[in-house]
Image 1: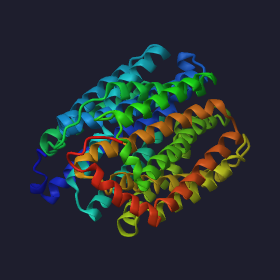
Image 2: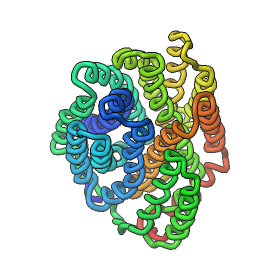
Image 3: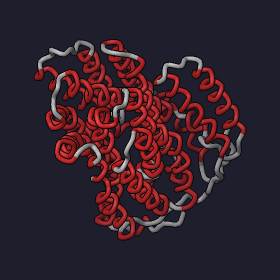
Image 4: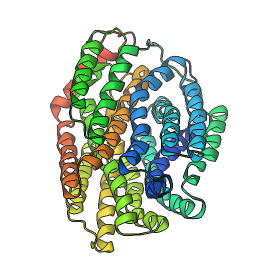
Length: 457
């Protein structure tokens, strides 16, 4: 592996972490800011709710479709190089979003932005797992990574509210530009180049199957076209059949022989579906149903965001000391409780009760990120860090896409009962992924994925 990781000082490692976290800052903040801006976009561009769903989902679906390709490209051509390309593309997409004169152009610009975004977080996480090799230091770095999610979630609605009220919804995309510039400078100054010792070929057929599966699933849900789901099932079956036979598959299905890895991917889908549904519905609820301003909406989101901010580093420390079980159990219990409470929300729900529910949801979600990432990369050979972390990131985006799609399919209490069931699933998976059988599956899987192991079966 072409890298000088062993020679990095502790200070430079922290600067690498800071640079990588800047990419997470803009992508996570972008999600919360865009959600707060949705009512203003709908008013200004005269668009129905289904088009607003596409403003969010075209981004998350494109990420989900390209994250694995970006991870494989980073492992093959160099993580720092791909990371730089992603920063530039994300900045260009953000600029185009701010200039969009119609909803169609905005959706197209979000697609460009997502192409760049697909090269940011999974590649940055791959850089982090390559630089921080010790179990404890890696868990702490991942905890800091999770804290940035909390920070960006906290400042996103507030900054977004201020920008929207002062300069219009277009300005929420401008803030990405200086952060992209700072991160790009960091890649030149402190981030070392690294790549996998066993470069893997691109799998275009697997990529196409994956894209068709994801887009037809979300399209069928948003546009209420149940027959489209037949295409989804057929594409998924074709994807699995092809991947099992391809020498260098798009997704190495052997990863899923590890119970903790499989549980982590499903946990990511469940948890991020809940978060996406929460942000989408509550942004519209607070501004359209309760008639709060953009700034007031940002303030009301603050308890949720602070919950994420405080719980994420705590979760990182818990994972480093006790493993993933405490964090996953806490996340499942708290997110389930918050979702059940959200089934009772009406236009007359007292604001203090909303604040409590939002805070509980935020703490629960803040606990879940560190164990997802840790379970995805632990036990995997360092050469497969990019691919493994990209699968985890893909699962997050798939969950986000499904959460937003469910918002159009279900309404009111029905939506939140479904989210509560998914949150309860996080609890069950937390128990399963820490069983003796799960540990044995890790021990059996790791040798299959070592350097030079190419066939997926």
